[in-house]
Length: 421
Image (cartoon, rainbow, N blue to C red; front, side):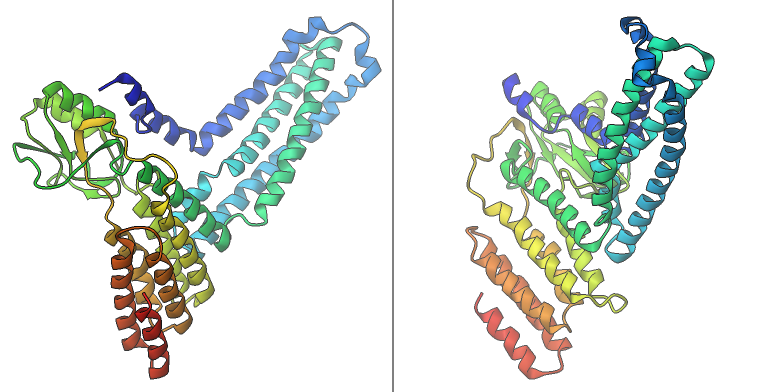
């Protein structure tokens, strides 16, 4: 296996860890805070470059008052922003599903806004302390004044973007859009690499040895490159049994081997599987579909009773599943020939997407009609397995509607739509 192909892979464990770390709010806030402190201190080092007398000409003596205003206002804005974000998380969780809150927490625009406010506050605080300590001098005040103007410009731009984001942040439509985007990204990555760069697993698996997880939870990420190193070193094969999204424990095998590895080899295989308490969207396209289906099901609950949201979610599910019909790029290149991973099953995807909706919306005619039309649209797409899966879900939805709808005329209408699939 050539190193060039390994370099192309998107499943490097190091990259995965850095990606996960970069999504943490405190990381981005810490970076901006350090940048703010560095900017304030940089004025001391740059002071010798400023000609004497500039301080009075550009009004740099007023920088202390400006910093006082900036420090007090940024503290208030940061507190308000935190309260708004927490409120948006709670609103999205109650109106849609708690799984959406994770996407809101990871929103880069919201994190940048909060980090900018924190960084600006610390910039002002350090500047005030340095001014009162007398470490700047007239030339240093000029540099600090220019830096303060630049910080104000950044704050104004950030505030305008933050206000625009707040108009939709955490709303039901915004939540659907975010989950749809995450699901499409995961689905497109899996479509390009149906087995995450490995070979497709088919037929019986080897039974020489099995490796189980040391943790209980969901597989969030598989470092296929690490599995390839173990398998190629032994000149054998590793057959993955637990794909991302699978719930594992310490008894069920996560991989089957056609060789007997030593304890170091077993540990390397275990470490290639990142197991956590909750599922993530990155390598798990089924999770995005499940969350969209949860949003629709919750909208159809008696407490909310919002068929419009369920219908909007059905449209999003069509766009997500339609990714599997795209034939624009070359797909399926194998980077790891010694690793075998099962591909996504279309029946499972359709079941995740539509079975909960047909169950929750069986008594709602509008949802039943839209569901049948949605399945009809998917059956017409260019995919060899879509028609059979759509027909199966259509028959299930129709049978559930027969038991829930009181009028025979409504049932007959759904039967005509189902017959067209």
